[in-house]
Length: 415
Image 1 (cartoon, rainbow, N blue to C red):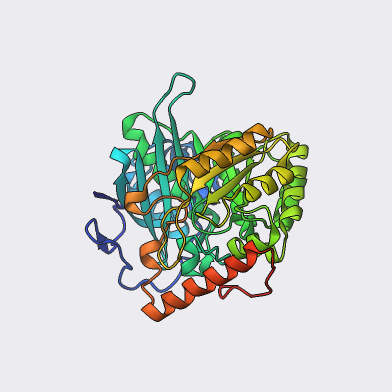
Image 2 (image 1 turned 90 degrees about the vertical axis):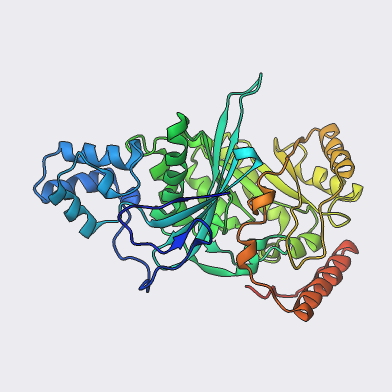
């Protein structure tokens, strides 16, 4: 099932049947800044300089942040001449078109966003019903880059390589798109996680600017504690965030506690080893009082043995951390599969009995390729059978060496 969300002032190509396509004539990024990333005081000054009354800034803000306006033409409280002037100077929305794919009986929506230069990025909106111990939640997982340079072999996004960093407005507008889709149902976003396409800490300036817009009470106005920033272990970025000491939750994509294996699963580990990553994350926790969460994808007979659990306990015990165990989602071109659930539960029990808080995640959106590690799987292309065989053989060989405790100097092809 697909539903297009299409700005009505754009002549965008693409249909609900085939998803967003590059519109004819798109040659590059639109040079106009996106309104969602413009500081409210700077925007108010621009409006005054253009000769409009001060209250017009409030009307524009209401259209941008408080309503269901998809395009500037929907801001009917603004005079036509003012809308035309704003449109010449800014983009009301940096997303040209969005195709929606629905899964989990409507509780998960995969959004494929077409940007001005023809690049496609994805976000995932997940709704969780209220429980006896928890209110209803609506969480959107957003992207910070188009593609990814890290190249984790169990992640489809890494197959794309890195196309480019996203602008701050392109990040924020994924949030606005999700919020518009919730509004007709009387719901609001409760959580935002930077866990979509890309490595947020390799585009940190724009990610922090986007997070500022999201938390600014004059703009989107979501509390900082409802935002999670994820990293696969960019230590300088974690250190920089620690100096700022915000109230965001930090999530670290760990996936292995031993360097030889993590070299294979998270190639950045060759630059910033796992102990340095966890030390930096612990310092962030100490500076902010915010518990760090560690993401751990469970891969059958690769990182799910009792020795792996013991190594993880040794690494995290006493740090007040929380571990999320995530069954690996199927990704083409790898020889790996998810650990069986009984092994995942045994792994979780080892952590819990050792005092490490642990949650086993249930995957969402698998039927539309929206689960962890699956974003952009269908755009990674279909390599030839020999290429698939070579890739599988390399992964089998490198993981076997890692399981024997041997480190490798092999350089990932995407770095």
